[in-house]
Length: 314
Image (cartoon, rainbow, N blue to C red; front, side, top):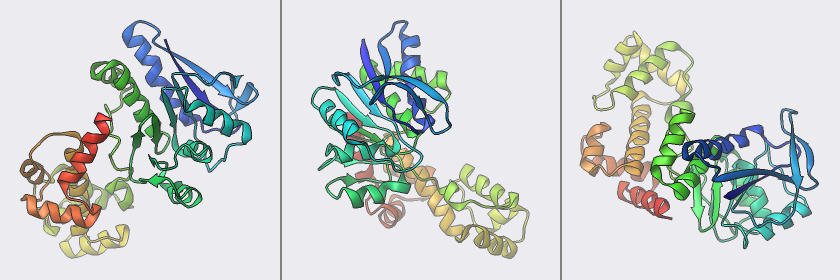
């Protein structure tokens, strides 16, 4: 049986515990208790989370667990001396040491992330880099695996990280069955962007939202201003003016960002030829897509695919 320890502390973010579900349903899927989840804190006893709900924990003891996962907090919370020592002692005796969201600050304070690739929530990634300059921060990632150390982005990314652990331990089919039970995507690749083109646009009116929904569903189309304006039930001139006022972008730039997001996901998660990806996402040809990738990501599509494959192999 693999023991999964969750390091908790007063005020930890309750959403961190979403990751527990992956291990719970792996037990159910395999019809045996392959994972035992333990909740740990410095002194043990009741610990209140960010919503004031109380969980019973056991005091730090032998750190020789299979996996130790540090929960995140709503903001930056640095570990105290006992927590730092426990995390540092766990590195050589656990198979995996992980953090969810701002839990990365615990690993960083213990020196565990020095020289390693790591991620955390985009909102605090620059603060993490500033405090701990030896870390190789990759802020635009869902999760990162560097040797035995795993780090994830926001709270829900902790579930992606846990599903990846289940897949590593028990195979693709078990992880897929768990994700289907949880009704979540199986699974967002670690290299997938934390950012969403639609979320960044944040249109206010239904008309502009309808136009963007039409664009996302019809990336292979030309998606001219006239076509988008028709979806929004506005004249082209009215549409262009309203679109820029609500999103701060031109329609053409927004469409390119939606195409880039879709193309990057296809490159990371599939083995489609580049010509097919370019055609399916509306770039028409691979050279046009390559130039767009270089502008947006500083890398060609092939490099992003190689990075995703390397991360999966690790």
